[in-house]
Amino acid sequence: MKVKAFPLFLLVLSLSLTFTSDMNAADDDQQSDDDNERMILYKEMDGITHVPWYWLAAIDAHERGLNVARDDRDENDRLIDIYYSPRDWVGALNPDLEDNDAERISIFGGVGLDGDDDGKANRQDDRDVLYTMARQISTYGYDDENIRIGLWDHYQRDQAVRIISGHAKLFKAYQTIALDDSAFPVPLEYNYSYNSTWGDTRGWGGRRIHEGTDIFAGHSTPVLATKYGVVELKGWNTYGGWRVGIRDPENVYHYYAHLSSFADGIEEGAIVEPGMEIGKVGSSGYGKPGTEGKFPPHLHYGLYRDNGYSEWSFDPYPSLNSWEKKDRQK
Ligand SMILES: [Zn+2]
Image (cartoon, rainbow, N blue to C red; front, side, top):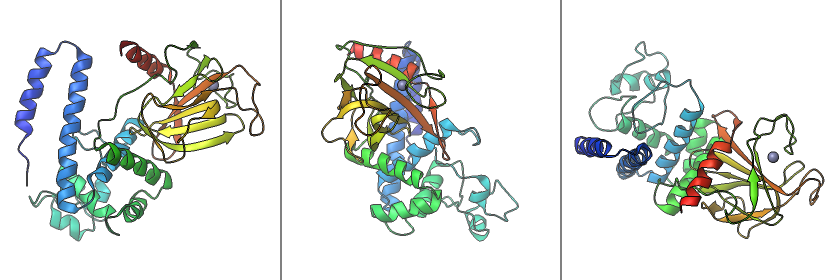
């Protein structure tokens, strides 16, 4: 059952690192190599457990996002980021927190399972961890609805189930996990301007600090999706006006506010791609639904990260800058 592809993969990788002077290109190569290796693992476990690979990929993507947002998890060099605490893995009364004996873990009621038939349930082994998760979430069945129930059992959080379901939808639709293209949220040929104003105490956000970057542009300038994602929220908010929230496969939530209109097909649950028009710049907000014109037209663009408990805003300015540069090179 073990795939012995790693030594060759490492050799190819080290050769490509040796001959690549451009570190960005090397990072991208590393990223796609990792994604390829992950896909092999997801599909292998799909074959063994009958849990569709895109659900396993979605859970892993969600956990990778959590690992970025948190510092209470031990570091690992694994490809798979699904995390079990040592205590959950080995069982509540197990005296050995590092136990990896599958039979003993089972006796102590730990969740850890042996996914590669070596008698070990190793918390640091990608196959064991993926297999354990696949078994847990398929307790009720293998169709999407039952997997969602299994996910709720595991995470006990609606938002986690929602985020993972969105990732699964994307991966299934595109049949890949390599969805990291980007676009600047306004077409570069339009007139626009923006400054780094995240964290300012004033602004048109209506919050304690300004949780975003304002991109000033003419009324009705197209607003584009910046990443692949699933629409999580759409509608009116007193401060944000007509706004839309989109979750990307890295768990990051993209918030677009003060729109004058939404593009056709932008509905909750819809899939968007980088560069796809999602609406038009406006000056909506600061009043009852439909209020316009209380400030100059602009796109308020916010980014939020989920840490498994709550969402927190981070500065979109560096991302906007890099997406703008990439678009210029297209
Ligand atoms: Zn703003």
